[in-house]
Length: 141
Image 1 (cartoon, rainbow, N blue to C red):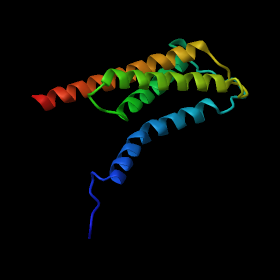
Image 2: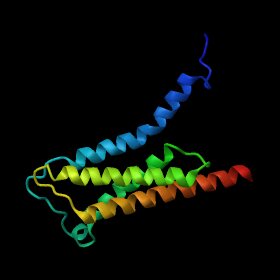
Image 3: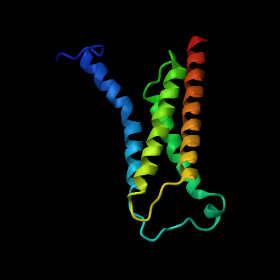
């Protein structure tokens, strides 16, 4: 049986596409949750309402999005440029989701949500950068 060379163009393309799968799944999940109508204007209750549970949920979701988006181009060369691009993509996606929520019944655009999105994306990207730098330092040792 003849196996494909892992360095051939098809293998590299499939590998690159596979690296975008986690961020794509995360983005689609965020879209599904963000663009679902909310007819009763449900609110978080109890402890979550007191500590801003909705903002934490935004931060967590965009943290995962930032982490997976940065991971999709895990390379030490030009890392600050890739991190900046990942941040712009995540925040731009946050702006898009907040803008589209205006059209969804029971939803609306909130500046606080967008700021939580940006903060979460920043933390996720920074965590991935720290992990990649730590991994690179261990490889060099």
